[in-house]
Length: 251
Image (cartoon, rainbow, N blue to C red; front, side, top):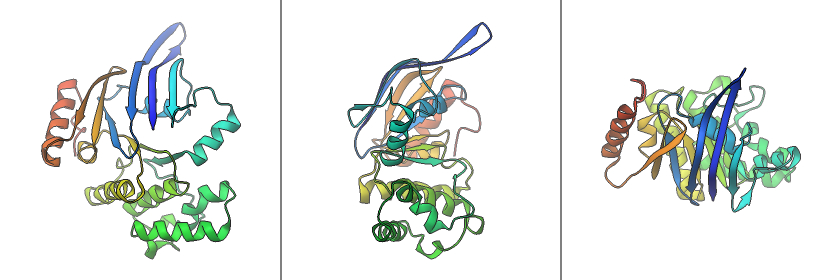
């Protein structure tokens, strides 16, 4: 579903060039829940921003459902982002002036979908994620976990090929974090969603099928969940500590 081939990205400051991503290749299959972890400065967020084309890369290819999106123009890219990608951000990115229901409808409003069809789909997704009781509330009136579940619901409205999640549990307490991860798992189970998540949170990552580990802008390795979730989390914690992760890189 998502392929990254030999991706390279660097930043410059004066005469100095600082490579951030160095020949990164990875693949996420349809219906997979995959995380990227690594120490601070390993290139996690830059990788996600390159995949979403929010920032340009120098070399490599990004394939979404076998179509190369590396060289799309602005209009083509906007179409792909609205119809083929779903986004979940750490700070929710909900519009304060819209209700929960209206925020969820937004991708289909942008896509000019029929109103009746759009509203029925939004209600079904709200029921699926257990947020139908807050549909008429506004972001300021709901909890962090409810905001993020709303963001996940919104990301699924156009049935994207992949959901790109950037530290989706970073601002949440443990209870809200689990609610958001449950929403991802439900999206995977009920809707066949493909999820690619950047996180420093070993607890959140331990629910994934696989975790790709970055170090110094390169793929250092991959861990696959084959035992209990708790054992997988311990393995992730040990790996990040070995690579020089901060004390905050845990649950």
